Amino acid sequence: MAPDSARSLPGSTLSVRSFAEDGWAVVLIADNGAGSARAVELGDTARAILEPWGATIDAASAEGQGTSFELRLVTTPG
Image 1 (spheres, one colour):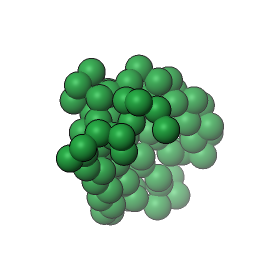
Image 2 (image 1 turned 60 degrees about the vertical axis):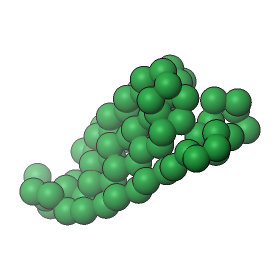
Image 3 (image 1 turned 30 degrees about the vertical axis):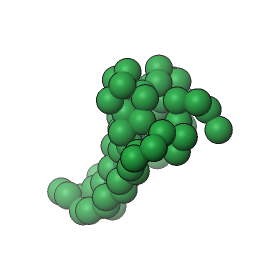
């Protein structure tokens, strides 16, 4: 486990939400860990895999404030 992982920080939380919105299945994942530039790199890698399938992913991370991912999967063919 990375030392900056939310799992390693006392009082840390992980939230996962999912919902449908305008033809998309949306999954939001966020933690309040230490934040990491690696999260954005992971988002870039995932984006390269997902975009040909019509899906999107956005990643954000701020030092000391955690990391979040927003995954959008198309549910209505376009």
